[in-house]
Image (cartoon, rainbow, N blue to C red; front, side, top):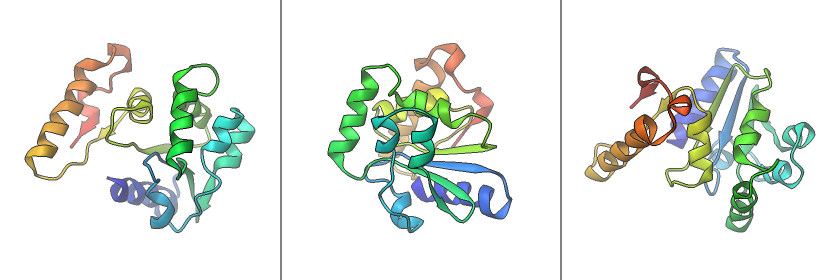
Length: 167
């Protein structure tokens, strides 16, 4: 999943010159070693003091691609989930909204497969979903679960259109 997300974002940004942002939300964020980035700065910068300046401070660049990384530390990762779960300015959804201020033609989110706020907020924010799965029974069950979530588990105004969901 991460390799596909990273390559898609890289292709859009570097090869096609489409202003793109990659948000690597795994624990640890896969984009750091794959794109030879540092683990700092990361999204802790944003969640410590939400806003546009902190959003910019959390961004790393690889050629023309801008990247936001989740924290490498599970303690920091869980602290963000705690803050995000309390609502207010420090929410994952608000961070994604802050990223959508017109700077980017594409935002590629590498969301974790777990059903935590990182994944759920990514789905709520997305207008296109690409589900990456291996041809195994376990992945088939996971795909079924994800499709159920996308097609009926969300409020109708938050669902991506059926034709915008790809496997």
